Structure formats: structure tokens, C-alpha cells
Length: 502
Ligand SMILES: *[C@@H]1O[C@H](CO)[C@@H](O)[C@H](O)[C@H]1NC(C)=O
Ligand SMILES: *[C@@H]1O[C@H](CO)[C@@H](O)[C@H](O)[C@H]1NC(C)=O
Ligand SMILES: *[C@@H]1O[C@H](CO)[C@@H](O)[C@H](O)[C@H]1NC(C)=O
Ligand SMILES: *[C@@H]1O[C@H](CO)[C@@H](O)[C@H](O)[C@H]1NC(C)=O
Image 1 (cartoon, rainbow, N blue to C red):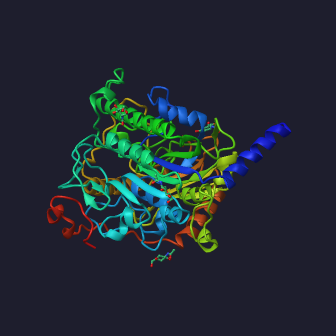
Image 2 (cartoon, rainbow, N blue to C red):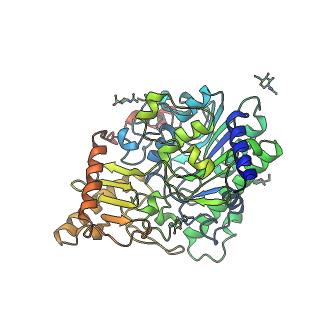
Image 3 (spheres, rainbow, N blue to C red):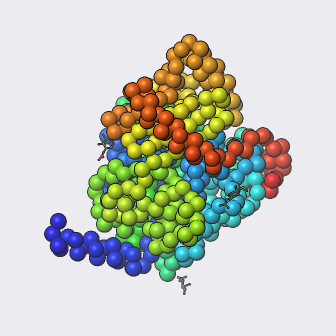
């Protein structure tokens, strides 16, 4: 590197630290698999996403939680879900549960730094009380839904409509990807540039139900299986939305001042068209296919770009990292109580990640007596207990069926619990041991697809990692039981899912 280059980098970082605060757009894709973006799989048609990823920094080791609510909780709070009782799964619409109210949410910190803050899309961090909802937790505006798995057009989940503008229920039967893109574009167009903008954009796409306008499905005529063809169309609709939003940023002269972060919330759901190949497993599992997310960053503040960054990032890191990218700093006391690490320097300069270990998840009761836990330390990963229902490797465009019907979330988790408890006990009795279940120790530097359990060769490392998990267990918080609350019924609220019943 010449002196001239070094000077250039120093100047860029000086301007980004001391210049106007940057806009930050955090785009989340729901249930998007590792193998479902063009920058990992050339069969996917995602030109807009690929352009940003290839000109930005592709994150090769960006980890999320195995399901939706815990990942979103991690992004917003910087605290592991197992310390907040949110490690079990998603928040069901009729359960009185929310991300703990004594934790500070990311947009609250950004408001303190002078940001305008908006959310467009899915919340899924609780809605039984108004205090749990977006506009009470740091967002100036909200358009979207509180829960998950609703219809893309009717916005109906079970027996109610879940769609809201701010605190008002709303009816709009357009395909949600269009609605959310349009709202994001309106926010950008109307933004007063005397303040920086934070836009959190958790799209409904590409979670089930599998629904997409025909023209997107038609982009994949060579795909044989119906679900996968439609699913790929959903990804391309999301890509078009992102293309429209970036055009609006350019037209409003905001692109050069904007940092874009893109992340999946968990792996693809292999029974619903999602694909994580060659990674093992998928959504709802502790394998890499469930937890290693497709992700990139692009734009303002990156002194180095156009490469793939292999450093370890975890979902909890985004909270302190985004605060730092916004020119702020966490109060000293809080930066030591949260789990997130400020990775802004690492990401903006391409230097070594500050993270050397993380907990994939910790749930002492799920599939008792085995539990459900995994930890990464350096190159090693230990899966201790139940890894989740999908234990294989799933090439794209094949039908993956599961006898547990996932069209109803509560029934689905109950079914998995019953079936897999029987299977685990069976495997233990037959002496099939941990390998059948996928439990074990993996060296991810040589075996990123978790094909070789090396626990027998390295009992010392297994013990070391188990001890570390036990250390984390000291801050374990028991999950809230998912007892339905009848007062939540949309019949009490003119047919809408509304807060106010806890
Ligand atoms: C939030 O409240 C819980 C439960 O009372 C407590 O265990 C936890 O330490 C609190 N966290 C913070 C950051 O105050
Ligand atoms: C933008 O905000 C500034 C500061 O609050 C205000 O003076 C100005 O009038 C606003 N501009 C517009 C177009 O609203
Ligand atoms: C993108 O913008 C075009 C032109 O306005 C519009 O026709 C299309 O529906 C938009 N697509 C999405 C996904 O928002
Ligand atoms: C990304 O991860 C894969 C393993 O899944 C590895 O083979 C590859 O070398 C990594 N890329 C970079 C640039 O580190």
C-alpha cells in the first residue's frame, strides 16, 4: 500500500467519523436461505441484491438465531434471547409475551443521537401491551404487522387481520412486498435531510405462506417443484423492491450518505421452498443451515469494499455496531451488560473480528432430558442436545416433506416436540448415540457443512465447550410458557390483532 492509499483511508475514516451522520438502512429478509441469493447461488435472479453485495462487503460468517423472534430480539437489544426468556421459538399471536421492557432498543439509542427512526414490515417482538409495540420502543413510525405467518394479501393470521399504520389498524390487500417497498420509498422521499435517517425494513418476504404474483414465478421456468419455483419468485420480488428503494435513494441524493445492512433472520425453511445447500439443516435447527445467515453491508463508511469478510459476527453485535456507525457510543455500564460487541471498526476497515465465540442458543427444557444448545469457540462448534428437526443436507428443487404440518405454528411446534422426543429416546436406546441426532463437535474451518463429528477424538475440547455453556447457563432465564390468552381474540377488536390484553 502506498502512502497515498493510506492517506486516502485515513481521510475517509476521518470524514465518516467527523462528517454528517450517515443514514442507516437495515434490511431483513424473513426465512431467506443461505443458497437463496445470487451472490451465493447463480441460479437465483437477484441483480439488485448482488450489485450491492458485490460492491459492498459480503459477510461470510454472520450468525443469527434459528428462528424469527430471537433474531429480531438480538438485533434490537444486543442481548442473547436465552437471557430474556425468548429462546424457545416465536411469539404466538395469543401469548402474553414481549421482549423485556427494561431493555433499551436500538432505535431508542438512535433517537437520542438525533435520528429519524422508521420501521416497515414485521415486528414479532410482542404486542399484548402497547408498551411492547414499535412506536413505544423507539420508532417514530410503523407500517406492518405484529406477528408472523400471515397472508401476503389479506394480512389475515388465524382469525384476525394483522396490519397497522402506527397504532391504527389498516386494511390493504396488495401484495406486501409492494406495500413495504412503496412505504420505504415514501419515507426516503419525505425525509428531512437536516437529520440522519434510520430505516429498519424487515420484509415479510420470503416466509411462508408461499405466495407471489405470477410474473415473478415465471422468471424460473426451469424449476420443477412448485413450492421452490414460487419461493424463488418471492425472492426476486424482494430483489425488485430493494432495487426500487436504492433508486429512490439515488434520486434523492441520499445514496452516498447511506450505509445499507442486509441480513436473513434465520436459515431457509426446507419444507417451504427455502434452501441452505451445501450447509446442513435449515430453519429451526442449530446447524449452520439454520443459523449462518446470508448477509452483506454496503455504502457509506466502508473504507474497504468489494470483498468477502470471513470474520465472525453475531446478531447481537448489530446493536452496538449500528450505534457506533451512527457516531454514538453505548454507556459504559450497558456495553458490559449486553452480549453484543461493537464490530464497526472491524467491518468498516476489514480488520479482524472482535468476536471469538458465541452461543447459538440455549434452551434447557426443549426436548428434555437432552436440552437444546450449541456454542462456537474459535473454529470449533459443539451441539449439545437436540439440534432440531432437519438434520440432513437438502439440495435445491427437491420436495422435502415433514409429517408435522407447519401451517399452524403452535400445532407444528407441539408435533415436533412429541415426535422428536420419541425419536431421540429411541436413538439413545438403540445406541445410535448423538450422531444420529446430529449432536457432536465440528471443526468448521475444515468442515463448514458439519459432516464429521469429531467429539470422540477430542473429549478435552468437548469438555471445555460444555464448561463454557454451563458458564452461560448462569444467566439463563426460563422461557415464558406459550399459554393462549383468550382476551387476545381479534373478535374483541373488530377483527384485528390489537394490543391491550396484558
Ligand atoms: C430486566 O429485568 C429482569 C427481570 O426482572 C432482570 O433479571 C434483568 O437483570 C433486567 N435487565 C436489565 C438490563 O435491567
Ligand atoms: C427540516 O428541519 C429543519 C430543522 O428542524 C427545519 O428548519 C426545516 O424547515 C425542515 N425542512 C422541511 C422541508 O421541512
Ligand atoms: C418497482 O417499481 C416499479 C416502477 O414504479 C413498479 O412497477 C413495481 O411494482 C415496483 N416493484 C416492487 C416490488 O415494489
Ligand atoms: C466462506 O466460507 C466458506 C465455507 O463455507 C469458505 O470455504 C470460504 O473460503 C469463505 N470465504 C472467504 C473469503 O473467507
